[in-house]
Length: 200
View (cartoon, rainbow, N blue to C red):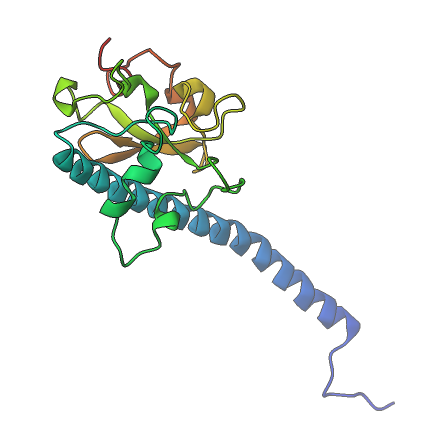
């Protein structure tokens, strides 16, 4: 009986397939985690650029922060007013969206939210009225609110854990930090590390 030495037997083929499948099962989670880490880092970079744009805006507008909504006065929403202060060599729309956000980005459904606790009756807040800029939140990884799609309506309601069970916060001083969802407490409450309402 002649044996074909140039081919694989069915058993050898099955062993090779089993080995490849096992290796793939080890590699795919690592690849997925690396992709997620890259998006989280990209999100941090986006928020840092937004922080710089906010500070450039306040320098031109007597140290007043922009409004968090587009309602009063018309066109005053931070999402629009800081656009001229972003790097002209980059995709400005992409900078204003978290790379891990998968929702609709038409209209006012954007993924970064401004901390509405910064609002005052004027409604523009003077940056000098914020005592601790290192702990006061400016922008957060957020999600669309069904009643007020344009606004952040409380940390426990709209902070979203897009990045490994947590999300990024941009603080007034321009630094960005990642927090677990469980560490973000309800709107209006302050912790030793996070201040939502600087008037409390």
